[in-house]
Length: 144
Ligand code: SF4
Image 1 (spheres, rainbow, N blue to C red):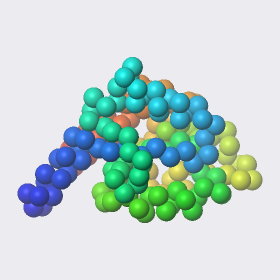
Image 2: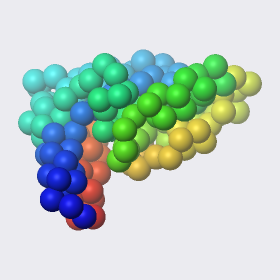
Image 3: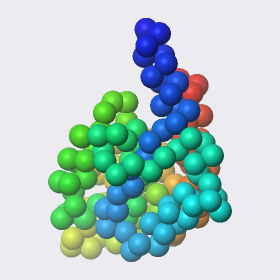
């Protein structure tokens, strides 16, 4: 690996940019994700920053199951992210489909549409669990 790509990877791990996308959640997981980003829980102390575009994001944080209506958009957003990219599924619905599994309009969890690097279960997942999941993902990337 060249020095330049070493520096780029170091910067990504030290300051990953994050995009949040609700694929069909009831909104409770979204509130917990926002809470994790506020000064009370302060996810930003790990250098993490919320971004508004997939083209600048390293990590896609998804909440909710994949509905049939959102699937194409989810795949399109994922494809617009630059490599290397990682997906975190927040909440039981995101991990497996949860309480919405089996509904006519729901496919399943996020991994039924795009690859997922980390699963954070809970209904809703707490800010502490979200921070723990993100830090574990970053630590595993550092080891690699
Ligand atoms: S896991 Fe629970 S809180 Fe989160 S979107 Fe599903 S039903 Fe809502």
